[in-house]
Length: 155
Image 1: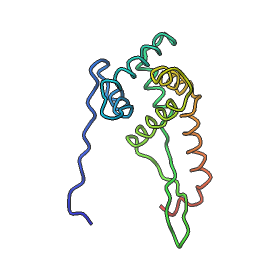
Image 2: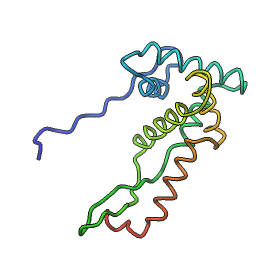
Image 3: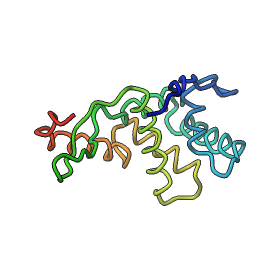
């Protein structure tokens, strides 16, 4: 077992335009090959598109999308007596938020469309309305946890 202490959690810094930590978390997940400027550009264009389409504050839409996509429980594979069980476990809020962001971005990348900014904006709007692939992923995870509730004592 490692003798080192656990790494302390560092809070994410807010982004320069919206002064919001959630926006910065999203930018860091969009990031590819270290091109942070491009990631910021994609997200800000998506936010502008949300503003034009919904006539609402894009930050509120983003918050609502992440909140509605965040899972409460997930399943974890546990080996017990030669067989593997899918054990439902509760998720901490920070981990749930990270999962929600990851699901939203993967659903946006899979969408057909012009560019990533448009795909992301439409996925965020859909998630805020509780439709779309990211929400489907959350429902699927909850269904899996519900179906395997019998194995909850294997925690």
